[in-house]
Image 1: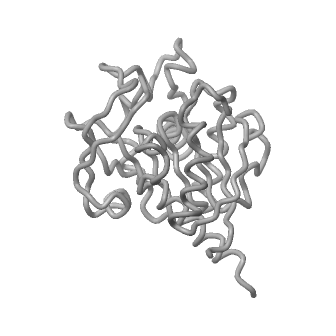
Image 2: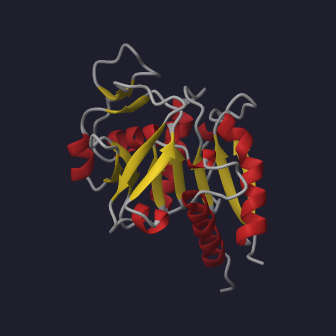
Length: 239
């Protein structure tokens, strides 16, 4: 059996958020089906504001549930995972805030905003989608020579969404500073982002935690668990 790895679940846990209720099922399935043991800790977004709140974990998953109680806490958790090489997954709101963190802290776009968090801002990176994806399934085309491609194992996949916001402007600037959009909808809108050179850094606008009935984890969730196990083995090996 694989050694237990630690997982930080960043989000404001609620029984009314379906993806949150799926987490125990997914953890059990990862242990039973894939022999991947994850010791998961929920970190409310306000708690994530603390310096190093997710430092020392083997993986970080920023879950759906926006608007978060603390945008700053979410961004701090994403930044720590990005800068410290901690395996990272952001889904739905986690995807949106991954782009926001990167735009502000890497691209220097310090004034870009998320319309759900700051509707009166002058420069939006994340805005309401032209067509809401709440409760929808849609095709995602995945680039084969990418982390997402290697994880999903297919150039075309149908995924579940529960979101109404997505990226709009400054995408070329994000790309120019190293962020890769490796999955798109049928109109070319970005649906998957990753960071080349990072051990595992993936964000999806779709929600892989809603795949099936929760007894067979989505390949993206299994890949995060595998990356966490690899991280645990690497950082805890005897000197």
